[in-house]
Image (cartoon, rainbow, N blue to C red; front, side, top):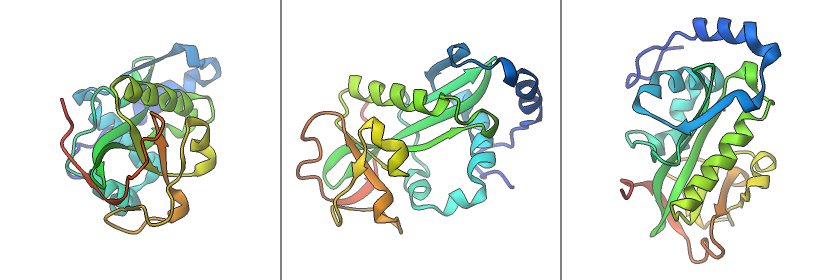
Length: 194
């Protein structure tokens, strides 16, 4: 898989070997969760490579985020033994005329899936968004996974993304009651409010 031109290739071999030796002793309480930093980009891109493959570059949500920096305080990484093992990114968008965040991608190294890292990243990022007074989060994903975090299917026709999306996978979560009231129209990336 070729890396995205915006990111240098990151060698996962050393991380994979280190994690393979320590997987039996892995405990979620040993994972440090923190805001994403600029220096994390190559490791995050490498995780996206192994998790999603090159097809992610053609997905509508990727194209919507492309060229826009993630929202720093709400985009988080999970680090285990100083290695980035997962991340969640949120990007400022306009949903119709209303400000919102686009969640994704959420990714964890395949060797560490189903150990609670992704769910912890979700819980913490949603709480960070709430604390920063964001009202609405949109994503393209699987409802059964995201339901516990408050996500529901966007009513048909309410939002239009700049490319094809399975309507059953277009989800949103209100961080404050009534945040989706009157939200309708095209979704586009915007510069975040600082």
